[in-house]
Image (tube, rainbow over all chains, first blue to last red):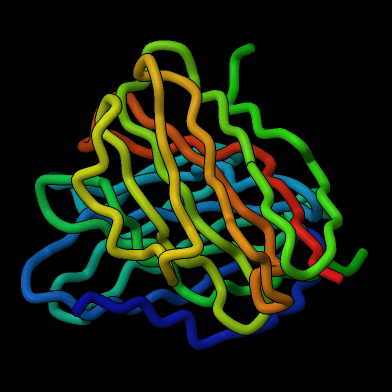
Amino acid sequence: AQSVTQPDIHITVSEGASLELRCNYSYGATPYLFWYVQSPGQGLQLLLKYFSGDTLVQGIKGFEAEFKRSQSSFNLRKPSVHWSDAAEYFCAVGAPGTASKLTFGTGTRLQVTL
Amino acid sequence: GAGVSQSPSNKVTEKGKDVELRCDPISGHTALYWYRQSLGQGLEFLIYFQGNSAPDKSGLPSDRFSAERTGGSVSTLTIQRTQQEDSAVYLCASSLDGDQPQHFGDGTRLSIL
């Protein structure tokens, strides 16, 4: 069965600092990979996705993620964090060839200090 | 509307009652999904619709849970004889088809007293 691990439950960074959120997955083949962000009381917003091709993926709000097959990782990065980035971030995987039935990680809560 | 719409946004009910949660997907999206988000279990897949049929309902936790979709659009998730462990946020998502990214609604927060 596929699984997703987000090892960091909670991360605090200063505004303007760089950010990296970790995501590791377990799957027999390369899955579809996603990062979503959730603000309190809101649904999930898609930040970016990886289906195939270029392993460095650009998303919205200045985020990017890099797929590393050898490490089964899909880490999310942002060079300079803004206070409005404080939220919970979820990594998700879907079976190859279909984005249905996503499996989510447990999430990383990001706190930004001013 | 432009996004996925869910109603009600909050629902409080007594244990043993039945509840219905509604999802109105983005217009033109053929695929629709239900997830449950709870403190203990995180985000769990419940069921997936392609059109009006449900090729994957493997995530429904018990036979008290059912869902239907009519007209390839609105979906209703029904929970019968609610239990306290059903308390959670129920999220609906839709996508153009089963191979496209999912767009989520703001969820229904269900509280069972």
